[in-house]
Image 1: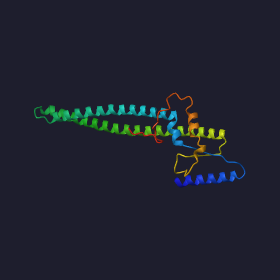
Image 2: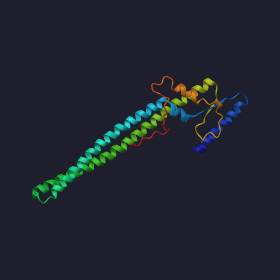
Image 3: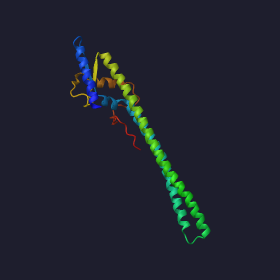
Image 4: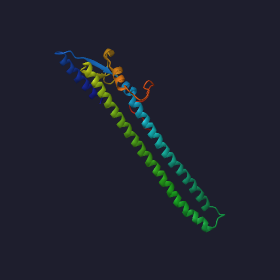
Length: 202
């Protein structure tokens, strides 16, 4: 992947060199990570994801509480089935009831594990879709800004894998970020602290 990106960059620079022979080519840089972290919709998406995680944690806790009660009931039935103070009929009745309760415990444990797997997959999918949508919006804003300013090529200065050196005199990150956050319904001055890959761990 790294070699492929370097190849694309080389091709782009070669193309730009050819174009510059007949016309002035303007280059600009932009820090995509800074734009992503500073975009107000990133904060809104992170909040939405955290709220969903909290809901799922609550559901899992309720299921775990139910499992704990079933386990306590199973132990009580098992103790009664082995208690010599009880009659043989009562011990047998409790033994059969403990078998049913054991299956209930097993089913509850399996249900929790399945629910957690599904919840993690759901959160991962939601996080991925959010990230893709946000990046698409940011890329469009960068393209619009570049076209309006007459830039023919914009490099991502926030990626050390693609850019070895960048003259930041033509960096348009702050102006694009201001454009993205125009009319934001939340305070965007506070640091976002959101990584490009939003964690979905429960």
